[in-house]
Length: 344
Image 1 (cartoon, rainbow, N blue to C red):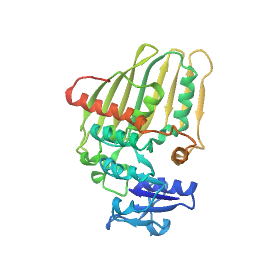
Image 2 (cartoon, rainbow, N blue to C red):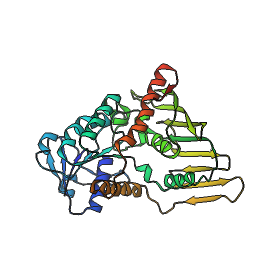
Image 3 (cartoon, rainbow, N blue to C red):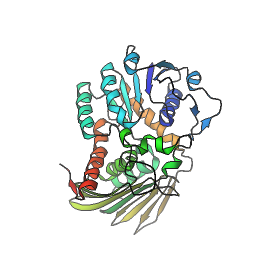
Image 4 (cartoon, rainbow, N blue to C red):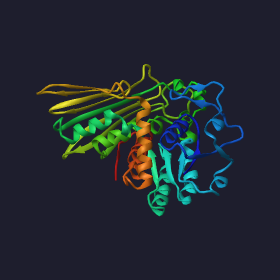
């Protein structure tokens, strides 16, 4: 089996390591520029001293996607900056390989509509990287909501607070894709996971109102903080769901709270703990102390391999990714116009 990687930064290398752990004999190729950095990241995104990426993984190198596609690949991993996803996918999908595209799958509405057409033409061969769907707290929350453990949902709040300069200590944050508009950056696109699992747990909203922009002293040309309020209809009731995203805070937080008339869930995705509070009954604490961050990436890779082998036809599809992207695009419009945006 053969895999081609377009983008071997920290996330590309993580997927590379996990793929090899599951498919030890797979042949690895990559598209690499002459000036590409050749160091290896460990699982904590720290550079391994005196490392050589190409030698360590015996990577066959190509200078362009056109040169690479002269041979057949089973899998193609598109893990470069978001703004470059579509142009690569447009060429790669006709190769017959299954595509793993890191979130967000694209960064504009036009590109999304075009890639949907391609995906239909080539019979659904795209899987999108949303690893937080495999976090045990998200999975447990979905189970509790399915069992109506909270009763009628009253409201929900999600928060993702990070500090952009600390993301990748090996690079200047001002040069990262997350800080640059032309590379598809900004808190809405880069922190899209929180939109994805809010929709997974509570469904699509009917209306979106957002406030935010570049509000800090960070040297970026994208929005660095956004507050979103969504009106979501659950059992014919309008339920407020709020999402707070920012690039600025310390200490970092990734938390959520879902409130019902019989109880509430309070989850922390950084400490891997969750509490189910029942108003009439015993509270339950879930502590996933044996869970490591890479575990959800491994499970995501297993899901991709099952998707590509036909064992599981669901996977995380392009249509799934379109739901959270729709909220991103509507939030951007709301920020610009100052008005709420309704979904079609």
